[in-house]
Length: 65
Image 1: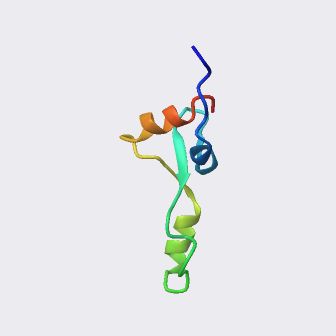
Image 2: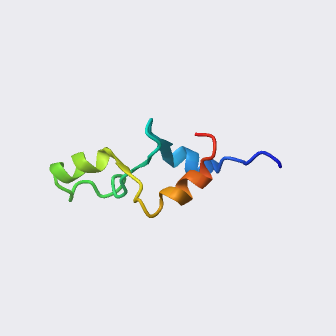
């Protein structure tokens, strides 16, 4: 059986925590920041967990992380 390859696009966007959960960055924190409130921008800066229904797919893309 050959080695599995890491999906490079996914590895640049997602990380695996110590407990095995996959995290990602929030969307909408690049353009048009003037119209967004400070509170909203502050929350968009932080990482969030990939939804539980997508965790299995995300882990398949990142086999060695």
